[in-house]
Image (cartoon, rainbow, N blue to C red; front, side, top):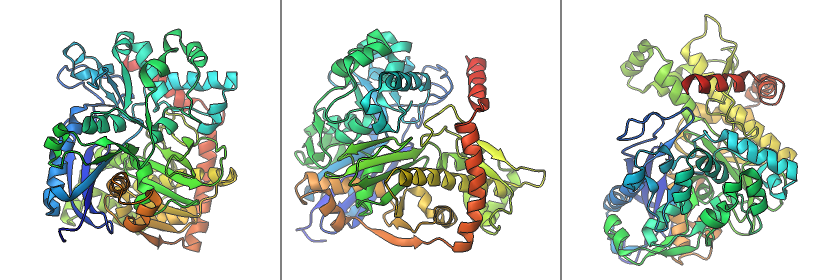
Length: 553
């Protein structure tokens, strides 16, 4: 390193932790990093401090945890990099989405006010808060009845994870808190607000999660038809200045400089989503390159020259990933979460002991055992809906399913079937895009799950596509750093910065023809189950969810 080098910081706010990464502007070299697990984690059972039990399908967070990442992980990453912080020229952040913060006019989260500390609706609603499914269903149904033109841009269905469904739930279940909410803020934008002192909505979440298309939101008349009290939702709580991706949202305030140890006045990029910033991290912003950000869930993003209606997509936004192209998004609500659930709750103690004896964790142990199997030898097929279905069915009342189990079934059999189920779910998405005129030619993977070679090979074989991997271990954080470099003026635009700073290993995994043929047979069973429970006449999954909610009420 020389004194002439310049650096940027990318901060990735994930589901369980926040990660800071220091990157050299000239070539994207990653020089130092640090991670902080959120002190409160995901709040899905009991509200902190009050003992208030949460209903099913809730998932909250505590916003002070995000500030703690800025206070702790950022200076630790700079120290790890061994650089002079005076040479940092910009910082950028990305966030899970749609994660919403109800705030006062000055950005104070309602949960930080004494009057509302014991109110669940005053807290951050994490992306995987699915308790607004009923509201989402009504939003979709009314839009269909009225022929709202924006609905097709979201695959024909609005998700319970998004801004409007969660906002309508707030109004209907806690009207006094809805009245106290002066801004309904994406966490991505709230963090940037804390860094700059300016509230700027980012074009990415506004487009994908906020139903903003061609510069407008759903009409006041439509919102009033949903609920008269919701008529002013956009005007009063949502609409605000929009910042384009890669632009500067402002500069680092003295307060935020004190938190981070970075120079006051450096550029702070407009906020972004963890998935969408990951495409530049792999220099994968060309049409046909689908980037899968694989962690607790998976988000699929890709660019195209064409505007198409893809059933069940999460959205298509002009400039939603990079300017000049249509950015598409789809996703799976549960992936790593499913594997984690199985290991935490379904694996016998002797397997855990065997893993310890072998010097590996339970995931590694089960993967090693599963890798010894021939494809189909377990006789199982699973549906990957443990956290509902985001794409292409967009229904979080669907649930997991395992078919084919016998008294001979062992944990490694089920584990492999769960791995395969998530690949099958991705294949449904890829095939739906292709059938809609948006073909996928390369799958680019980033995120923690890329470390599992068996899983990666399964995906290549199931999809019959070359699979590339982003070589950074911190794909979203690197993507944010790339946006920081653009916001600071070091590069003309995001594609130019991605070419210099991003990287991937092209074709790291390639489909094996005999494996492809074997998985085609299993996938046919998956599709039969997928369509029967998701699209057919079966109401079994939805009925069970209703019974559960009633029993726990």
